[in-house]
Length: 60
Image (tube, rainbow, N blue to C red; front, top):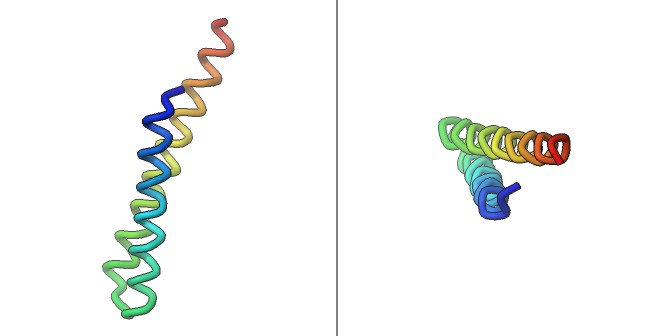
């Protein structure tokens, strides 16, 4: 529904992937976990936007 929210979620996903990769390269499991958590949060945000879109379509 909101392009701004989708862009924020995509940015968070990219940030999480980079952070996870840095953790992989350095062997830092804490950084890896933080990166995966950010990716999960981004996925949730995308899902929320999809539900909003589906609800709006159903109402219209």
